[in-house]
Amino acid sequence: MAETTVVHLLRHGEVHNPTNILYGRLPGYHLSETGRQMAETVAKSVAGRDVVALFSSPLERAQETAAPLAATFGLEVTLDERLIEAENIFEGVPVGNGDGVFRSPRHYRHLWNPMRPSWGEPYVDLVRRMKGAIDTARDTARGHEAIMVSHQLPIWVIRLAAEGRWLPHDPRRRQCGLASLTSFSFEGDRLTSVGYSEPAGALAKRPTVPGA
Image 1 (cartoon, helix red, strand yellow):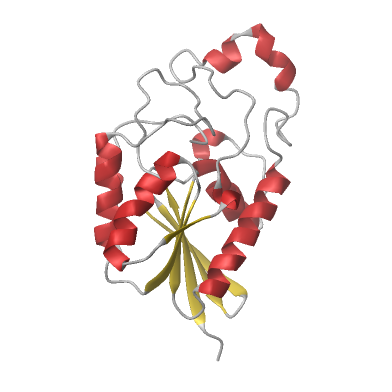
Image 2: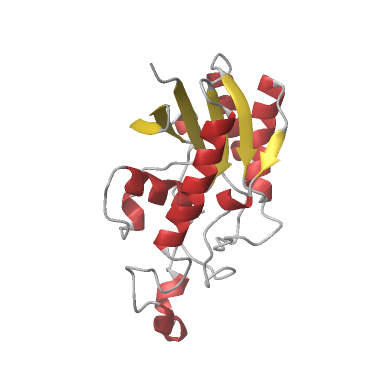
């Protein structure tokens, strides 16, 4: 019988972003106090699990979310560039209230193809790199569990791909809340199920920038 391995994709916690910027891959964006509480809550919720490997996106908010997990399990955090946020040409632009990206005509030339999408990293490229990262984690933790800290859009798109769904989507319909766990279960190399949970959901206060 094939060994069971579980790879958990953890979205980072809430970020301190008072000016509501689409920060994407920009440096200098750290967890808020609530975000740090979220990270601690997740670490406590999985403390009894058989986690033997821990990976993180290199961005600060992801590493800060991984830190309580590293302390809980006594593991080193392996940084994996494949877990980084999706590229987005609107980095640094205010979004949210007023939807600054869509309100300015100078941005329209980037919005011509939502299927790809034309304003950022192609969905197929996201799937390719995230699948590679998951395969690495599965092989590292074979017969046990691994946690990988990443970002909303990469996690959601690889879930869509794993479930055989269409990659283009409405960002408002993503099931990938702050500090949520999207869990891939494998028998050997075969994906058998995808689960979802929000161990820190009670701490979420408001919607955040899509894809953060």
